[in-house]
Amino acid sequence: MASTDDPAARLDGENLRMMLKKRLKEPAIQIRIGLAMLILASLAKWFLHPGEIISEGWTDGTTGFLYGVSIGFMLLGIWRNSRRGRKVP
Image: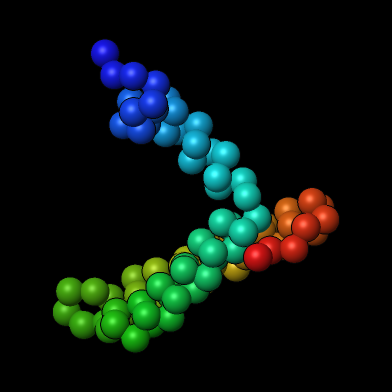
């Protein structure tokens, strides 16, 4: 059995889920996720071109979804940050 000082022993499935739930509620993390999705949506607009394999509707839908997720995460992070009374670093 691993000791409690071993980092690998602390990252079992249950502890990992709890850590992710706690971290995802932090406003700074939500804003960073939103910014990453914004970058991904911008890159998808450049690199997903409609053709024989991918239709135009699918590329527009994917880009719109990524923009929506990015805006949602950033607004949620800003709202939670304002309720905490802290500034995002």
